[in-house]
Length: 133
Image (cartoon, rainbow, N blue to C red; front, side):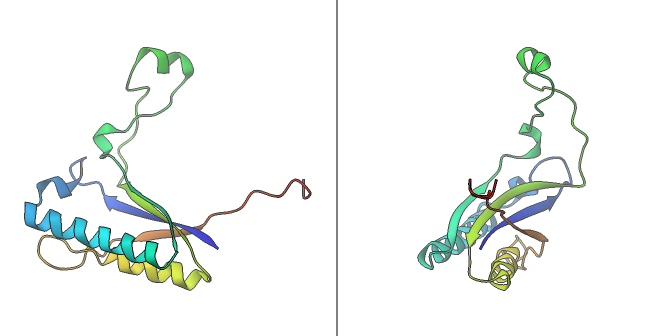
């Protein structure tokens, strides 16, 4: 079963607060994430994992006409949180995806405590086979 684990971070100042962390805190956080991804790769559960650019660099598709004129491509409302990154994992049971999400949520922050942010876990649905359609 494939699941997408989506990390959403409080919006705060409109950019990653992580950019304000000390180099030591940032490096500890990144090491944690790399170690998690390495462990998931070794267990054969990791399909993909990516961090995303900060909200200040986001764009909306808007209309095709607007898309040709402007790199902004339309106004986007300021959300309460933003999508910071994701993992796609292939696991035997949903409970394992929840375990991985809990571990990812325990990434360290500058004061040495776990991040403890919600990570949404959603099953990735397979397309129907041609014989089903």
